[in-house]
Amino acid sequence: MAMPASFDITSTVDLQEVDNAINQARKEVAQRYDFKGSKASIDFDPSDSKLVLVADDDFKLNALWEIVQTRLVRRNVPTKNLTRGVVQPAANSTVRQEIALQQGIPPEKARDIVRFIKDAKLKKVQAAIQGDQLRITSPSKDELQDVMRLLRDQDFGLALQFGNYRG
Image (cartoon, rainbow, N blue to C red):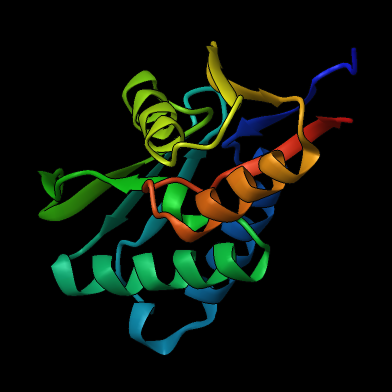
């Protein structure tokens, strides 16, 4: 009997690339004329996987977010894994916003992905939730490729990466 083939589905963000993008964004903010003399800052906490943007008003906060988002895209960081929090008033008449970086697949999204795979009615394809990732197994490599294609076409609100392929 042939060994079943498998692959893992993960959703991670490279924190070093995020840090590099944030440093580039800080340099751009320091050079831009519309941010001269304003209180604009970008803080990154890799241990909490969180960004904090601070600006004078909502308009500058949105401009700051656009700069950060552009830098993240240029460094191939998936922006689908970023969740913007609500804009809150902060000290010295500024506003702040926290942006969470999603590391791993949350349990509710994992259940949605498993349900989607089961609803696709592919024969002998098994999906198992393993912590913050999924393992997909099947005796047929072609069916695994079909699962990858289906998942790439579907939007789950996360950037999915496929790896650890064992044939």
